[in-house]
Image (cartoon, rainbow, N blue to C red; front, side, top):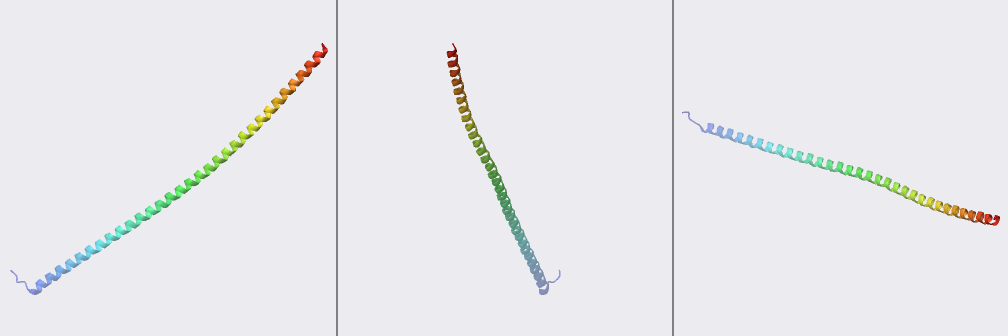
Length: 121
């Protein structure tokens, strides 16, 4: 068997130490990279959430505007219908008045004609 010298042992220790140090550095670098990926992923997710919320808010505002415009149109239609109903009521009163005066005229004419006919006989 070969004789192991202190120098050989020291070289082995140095090699093991350097391998251990390199492994520790790789682990640290991997951990740092993983943490960066997690941080980047979190930031991206948060941005997507914020952007999604903003888009949703914008869509809600647009729907709200459309509803307001629709309600304004409905209110205008209701006012128009109320005006038309008022006009119909006014026209109906005018027709009632004309009918009353026509009936009064016919009655007066009938009374007058019957009085003249009564004088003739």
